[in-house]
Amino acid sequence: MAAAARYFQDMKRKGTAMWQDFVDGLYRDQRKTIISLGIGILMALVFAGIILFSQERIKASLVDRMAFEHLPSEKIQPLTYAAADDTIKRTKAISVMFSQPHGEALEQIYQLIGEQEAELNRTFYYYPIVYEPASFVDRYKVDPSKVTFVFYEEGVEKNRFTFDSFENPQSEFIPELNRLPMWTIRSLDDQE
Image 1 (cartoon, rainbow, N blue to C red):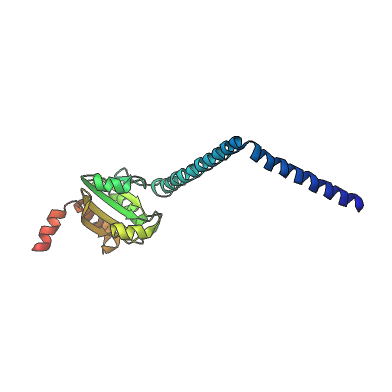
Image 2 (image 1 turned 60 degrees about the vertical axis):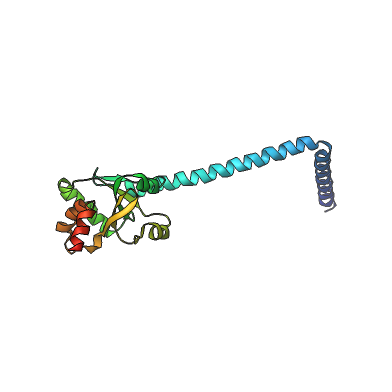
């Protein structure tokens, strides 16, 4: 028992001596201490930057794997998260499908496009709703639970429809998708 007490007292003395040497060293060589602290802070900032950058790349990779891996046709082009908003704003004319990357309606759309691809006369872009669905409601006025097709001209919405608005999607969907960019014709029909 006495040996254990002596051992702990000896360890305590050594620990206190080491701490005292460390503190004395800080005061003796302040320049070295400041440089060491500066390097430590710089390394922490670099590490934090790497983590933030990696998170964005991981999110993009997950979206690519979840949403774009099984597109049924070359007429559906991926609209990547990082560039989607800018692409919509800067493109002269673009048709975009907003949808979650899973669900019965999306599977039905993929099936219809696979069956009727020859009738589809244009390419459209798929913008998956994966992260922050509330931002899609605010920014694009789309319901994240529905598949919505929107045509933009120079970043301004001109025409839209949702897939669930069709009574007979087998015969109505592809023709309506082909007419989506013809917003001026639709507005003339609405005036009559």
